[in-house]
Amino acid sequence: MTYTFPPPPVVSVPVIGSGARFPVHRIYCVGRNYAEHAQEMGESAGEPPVFFLKPADAALVVEAGQTGQFAYPGLTRELHHEVELVVGLGEGGRNIAADEALRHVFGYAVGLDMTRRDLQGQMKKRGGPWDISKGFDHAAPVGPITPAARAGEITRAEITLRVNGELRQHAALSQMIWSVPEIIARLSTAWELMPGDLIYTGTPAGVAAVRPGDALEGRIGGLETLHVRIV
Ligand code: MN
Image (tube, rainbow, N blue to C red; front, side):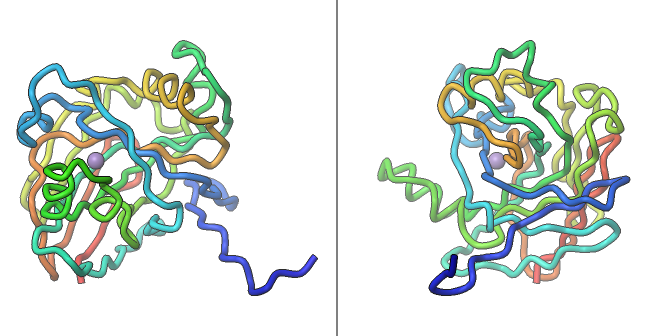
């Protein structure tokens, strides 16, 4: 078989303790998965979390020990950080039961759901799609994946984001409204999940704007730290 032009390369994420890389299929995201973040976004209490997607090639893959270079995007004056636990699936499926869901997890990583907040606000007002605010090029920085067995009891971990050394976001992963098994179960009723899917599980409170020159450090206990510089 021949192609009319070369197909795009497979986007892949390094795996801690392995020479094999994790090939990315889709990027699913959960919005409003921490109560205090939903409040800071002006959402009424009790609104359930939501799902949205980013293109697979929006992943900005940061190798172990490296600092990702994130180019400040156009069309915005309000680029926000959202630090999130990222789940990488090793097995797919439809209608996965929550009590079976963790068997589908390959591993975990620290990610940033970068957001053009001003454009998201405009789209919310118009009832329009979020893609232009969430699915732009390189909008999904992600660090190396730690295999689940090596990551330990991830739900007991804490998540933090520092900008230029200053703490901006801090929460316990146990504060998620939908837990990881529940997210996988719910997602798998709407889409057939596949090996290689990445799931951004939502951000805690404290989201704010970043500027060129800022150094971002995302941490989750047991996982590789994510370093990103805005350029
Ligand atoms: Mn998010």
